Image (tube, rainbow, N blue to C red):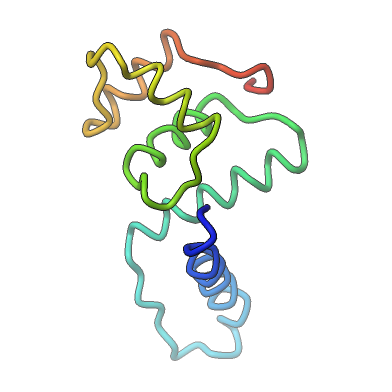
Length: 116
């Protein structure tokens, strides 16, 4: 994440964690949930999986590529951005339809060596 979004990223992850952690104590409290927060939680889960195993699952890699296209303002420029640009440069694959996007990556993709 870009430095200016790291605090918001962390708050999003911690807010959901705290809600579920304390659900038994605070049974009457509701979590106002924005479905886009799921995207952030999946990125966080991917980071945790990578930290534990040293590898990405292929599906997670595809999701991270989609996330980078959907939220380009959030992520730092780097290898992930470069991989997305390289793969999509022919213009045949668009990220607007997730099923088509995922199917394109299922056939071939810019898989780094640590993608299982």
